[in-house]
Amino acid sequence: MNHDEMTARIAKGQGFIAALDQSGGSTPKALRAYGISDDEWDGDDAMFAKIHDMRSRVITAPSFSSGKVIGAILFEKTMDSDVDGKPTPDALKARGVVPFLKVDKGLEDETDGVQMMKPNPGLDALLQKGKNKGVFGTKMRSVINSANAAGIAANVAQQFAVGQQILGHGLMPILEPEVSIGAPDRADAEDIVLAEILKGLDALPDGAQVMLKLTLPVKSNLYKPLVDHPKTLGVVALSGGFCREDACEHLAENTGMIASFSRALLEELRADMTDEQFDAALGEAINHIHRASIAG
Image 1: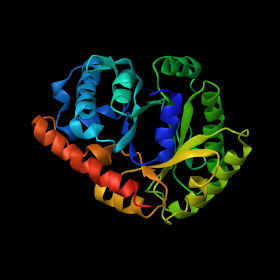
Image 2: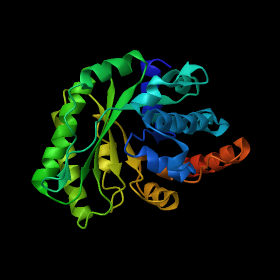
Image 3: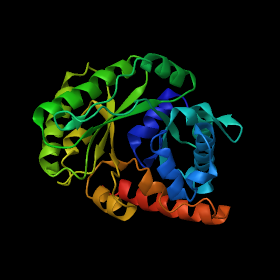
Image 4: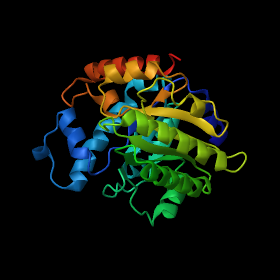
């Protein structure tokens, strides 16, 4: 797939984006959920080898190539590794799946009810590396823990500022100002997020587009104005701690949003499954998430 073909694949949105981008901090938890305990690996290299084996198994499973997964978000080490003897981005594109790259370096401590992204002085080099390897776009996450208007404005503004930097490299940024589902005033926070994102979109240059990855909102279709905005290529939803059943139920209530799930996609997969059992469990998850993504 070339750039125009990948753009069309994402714009049509008849599927969902798999989030396969667990970083160093979240990898041990992901491995435990998969059935691999901490004493089965020693050191970061061995840990990342284990998680890459899991991701490779997902990517090469027959159900993953069903056409229902239209994109996948990768951790840098996954992008740098091979699947089926090909660089991971190429292996994905051969299966009709558009590759994205996680580019943030984690979160700052909370200030004004939000956690901003940490400084990322190596971002330009990473973006050039990703482009050279054939990724279509990027993803970066910050977190909103309460309805603090000043904090949310700063958080969203940071996402758009870095998004502009990413656009400058010819890549499609997925902006992810995640509202924590545990926020006591989540509905109010989401109203503020909507207003700030609309400001950011309206300020983008003519012809520019971004993508958005957002928490499934308390009020169904709250983000429909973002889905319909000419400066968004697509709006995807994170599962945010919901189990797959709940995440899919909420997603189906939001017209035009598609899934970009991680834990909710992988939660029933185990290392000791046979290949047939693994593909059956993955296929069931893919079918469930796909139905919710196209329900609207």
